[in-house]
Image 1 (cartoon, rainbow, N blue to C red):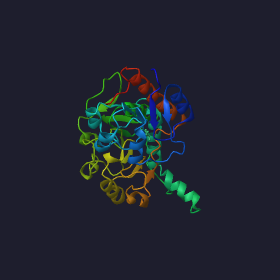
Image 2 (cartoon, rainbow, N blue to C red):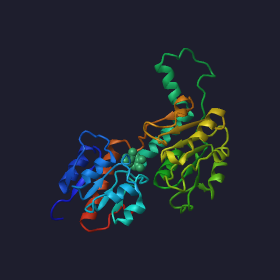
Image 3 (cartoon, protein in one colour):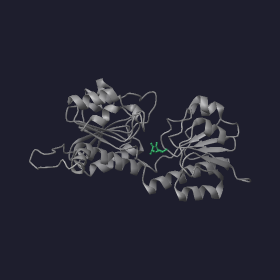
Length: 322
Ligand code: 8YV
């Protein structure tokens, strides 16, 4: 690299990441971590050669068409890339990368937290203690579902799904999964593959969703499919809200169609999620914190920098998605 390329960073990144980025690139940073509008991003992009965004910035086909011609890359600080129209980027020959692998452990931790929190009524218990409503104890008090030895269904056996399977084995859970293709038995031992989503749902106690959001997976967990789960079932989601039909899930949670749910991601997040979730005791809700650990956020940033460095050195970036 001769002159340092300019990278527009849309959100505040960890200190170590911004420091390393500045060693290799000129940077346009967002020290106040303000959520920029699309117009602001387009305006700032006039002075940049690449953009390093988060999933909070949307790059629709229309936005990508308006990007200045000097933009060579969108190097995401995320594994999910549903916020970027990949076909539109390809048309403009803008390289798009993501940050896989480095957030699998952190996200799997949150999946396990959701499973346990939903099964053992964690937020209900927390509310009870905080509000000074906890007045008594009895054998019938706050009885939840035990997950030890239960059947875990993993929808989307990618990197995160595979870590969740390993962690769940620590609770003696048996692993069932659906994926576009069955995995090599070297990569996933002792897991039962189900060729269809419906077959998976009919054979499990806990469902953990790990498939990416796409036209194919939008609303995948519909009312018909939820009806295949038994009434003690627990549903957790750490991938994207779009995979779930919220009305259907809320109906099942209200009517006893399933026992509980744990959610970290939502349609309309952060401030326009389905209001029905807020009314329910049997949902454990977190604010999209799957990758929110210091180690992981640093690693995501370094991975995005590696991708940018390769691109501006004329090499193929490791994590190219378009
Ligand atoms: C982060 C995520 O919030 O990487 C993803 O796809 O959903 C989350 O872990 C996101 O990466 C921030 O852009």
